[in-house]
Length: 635
Ligand code: 7RM
Image 1 (cartoon, protein in one colour):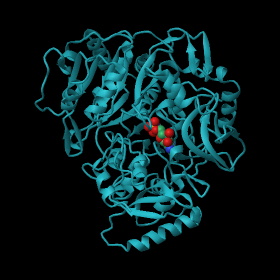
Image 2 (spheres, helix red, strand yellow; image 1 turned 45 degrees about the vertical axis):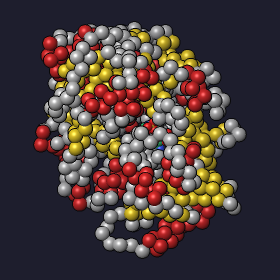
Image 3 (spheres, rainbow, N blue to C red; image 1 turned 30 degrees about the vertical axis):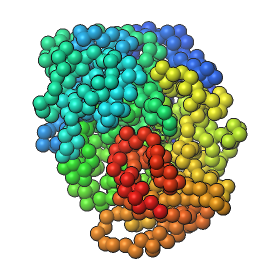
Image 4 (cartoon, rainbow, N blue to C red; image 1 turned 90 degrees about the vertical axis):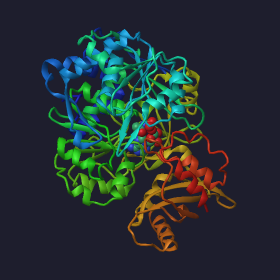
């Protein structure tokens, strides 16, 4: 039996028990047998959730890029590490081998050093999904600088806040970016942000869209000439296991974004191990995660997890609807993608366009489908299963958070029987529990509560950059000695978990706790509905009543809206019960979404509460314009 690669359900249970009963022995064995260490650890784990403090593999020395690149050179030097698929398909894809990735990362590392970046310095990376993004992330890791990738769809204000919070010395960006048929002036956004950032002394600029841009003398440098002149080798900086690897910002429900700090060894071990098992990756597979590297999913499952396994990973610059809605499936066919990993919001958007786009392409290479980021509704789950996987490729509904580093609750494909809308079982080493409002653990099955984790796993974030107190308050105060996720979940009769959404999405109607996910699920079953969001609003008798925002499918025919309202409530009554019926249903053309595809229910709640004077920070919205139209038509 190999603990590294789980292939049967009995094996899962056996390895799981070992990981829980003897966590140190278990992770020590995984770390020892599958990674390259310059020095082994003195102690596997030190932890105390009351401080909170967590250290894994203390005393060990390593460099993560040596594990992700150098150690593959002998056996996989000519294997493709990254397939770059550009925004415009006619530009043609690029295959970057492990050998060439090594050389590019080393050259970039030399450029960083030459520009005065040293171990522990923070570097902000604000780039589109182009090879330079992967290379700059890895170059930072190679020299021991802490990367802070900011999604290149964020505004100048959001960027400046993040640069200042981490006190970055350098920004790496490009002249611009492509997004479908549009171009975006990235360098202009950086210039605007830097008017308010005194910490940045150097800006490196990659050429992507070849437009004329402003280069500030002394501060801004074109990247390519520097790389051309740099030496092709660079010895990796030897890091401590607990040296920070990166900061990644995640928005809080209030206040400024939280810079989650991830460290080196534990993050490497956990992302590599989850990647191998959750996607059942084997040597000849081509893996594609469609997330942006600006999110934790991209960090862990486009770059570090796949590369640590010597895998081939697709880096896609574009969007699902350019040149048309078949783009994803064209890419699957072209690169014979074996594992495809995307978000429910993308699945729903594609499902809305019908199946003709999926039928134009040969999808038979697909062995595993993944989803992440939000609860996936039942209809979208089946659409994905029927039309993309052709009922032959298991769906892994993977739950995790920026704070977690890697996948926490998930089926293992071909091992765990799946169940629509359920993330199913804890991954190896993860000890979830459900808590009630009084702080008591809820044991047994067929129960629901607040999702916590009892024991540290190797890739848990260690702190919030510059604010350990906030880290403790946010995650370790609500429930003593437990990590609190902020999510609600239920556990079914066999112990499978279903994530029902953020706890602040729980609405109490006449004393009944209702999660938004199952209600939205029911609404979306209506054949005319494309997408929906449910929030609560104050009600004299029930305490709260339900307000649904519903997007109808664009079928060209006009509909009797009153009738659709009735039918929606009928479906809800059948699936959940009359308690969950909606008092108000507003039809809309769009829902406010974050740039990673999560519905911003906070704004919808304010509209339902008729409290629209102060909507708070909407600077990270993908589509701020829909907010006004929703307000105008509010019920
Ligand atoms: C990976 C990522 C984290 C929040 C989390 C949940 C929600 C993520 C799922 C999910 C239901 C899933 N990190 N979430 N995955 N909800 N099922 N499979 O998205 O930090 O950006 O967001 O996303 O609410 O707390 S994140």
